[in-house]
Amino acid sequence: YLAAIESSLDQRAVSPTGAAGMWQIMPEVGKELGLVVAGDVDERYNIEKATRAACAHLKATYAYTKNWTLAAAAYNTGRARVLRQIEAQQTNNFFDMQFSEETNRYVYRILLAKYVLEDPSRIGFYMSREDLYYPVETTPVVVDTAIPNLTDFAKQYGITLQLLKDSNAWLRDNKLVKRQGKSFTIAMPNKDKLNLTTEEIPVYNEKWIQCVPE
Image (cartoon, rainbow, N blue to C red):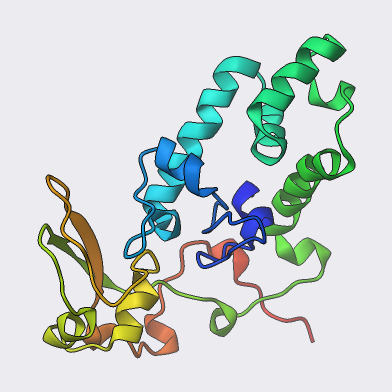
């Protein structure tokens, strides 16, 4: 739900301050968390790696605050600022503390996202199977060498550069530079599974599928 309010779950989102990806990670924070942030590769746009990094960051903050709500607030305003406020206000209960208007709203936005997304139908959002997005079926391809031209690389697998980058937003250029001792896992779209019928679309949360009332 934190990611939902940060980016609307858009893995390509970029803020005016330079935070990027679904978790809106700043460049230096991403590097500190072990992500590659460079011209050809930016793992802040890699959903799996960015999620692991964001969770590591939240867990590290929780180790200081002993409070998940404050850990969430710190994601917005910064860990150092939250720790100063804990000392100044002599409490570690977010709901007993005063922050900036943006940070005060931030936690409530997370709670609201949880309320809505857990059961959209209770506030009037009804969705059919056709309304849902579905994951593209991919096969992992491990690469530990340079790729001079990603268009040519994609064509070897029978797909276009656009389809390749749709499933790998972290590929930021038309090439991949070799990095000593490091490999990358590319999610290669299965070209035979790109045009699924409605009946073939996988559904992971049947509670979301509601019939529109007459």
